[in-house]
Length: 327
Image (tube, rainbow, N blue to C red; front, side, top):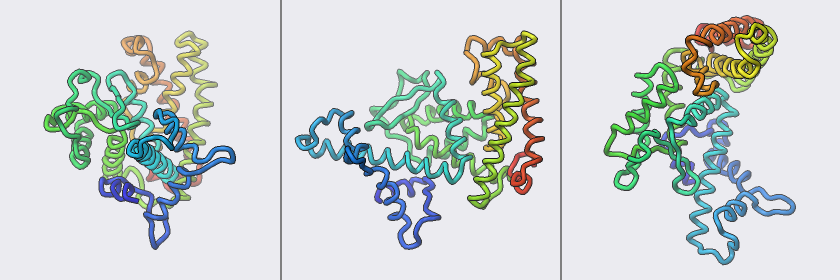
């Protein structure tokens, strides 16, 4: 309960609106502890004791109580954040998609990660690997991180640039560490993204949960149908002509899926070449303009046109057409 209230004060959006009227925090805590303390017929509390084992605690009866408390607290807080993300994703698939896209960006070589406080991931810019201000500076407060993320958003033209700008601005804030908790970074990104999407009218506010789920399902069906069509027609044609090979065709298809998902589920896309760089080996990036640009951009543009035509036949999409950036 205390950690849930702490997260609430820190600005995290908790799924409290559909909880019991009398004690929403208690209702949510029970749901979270139900998965945390679940047992099987042969194994009591496997989540807890498996974690103890990984942490080197072979006999919890003989272990130091302070050590057990530390491991238990780290595990419980990590489980709470994980389950909250799962619950939030069920209620708002757009947020889940946005987080997945940023996680894909953050595994690029230009970003580094390390674990502190048990299993908690911390991120930094790889070029600062040997100059991390960990020992003599405090972590950046959540509200100031939020301001940095917003400033970085306003000066960026793509999500990849947004990520890079966040860490560059963080490094300039010399009074704080230039390393940040992964879950706090993603939370601030989601918060800023939602603020500007709502302000620009890119997605409706107050969309009923059931309608939202149906809308997303229809969009995902249309994406799957477009991708199948794309592979059978456009991409197979390029393979037959020798413009790309079958492996590159699969990568272009995957890039098209990301582009369409961003377009429909987030409301905006990165520049088309960014999707090429995400899917293709770094050794091929320099060949984009001369060897790949026409094929790749034709693939993306044909996918978008086919996708839009399929959306016109979807009942819920028509009802909430203002959900999409171009209406």
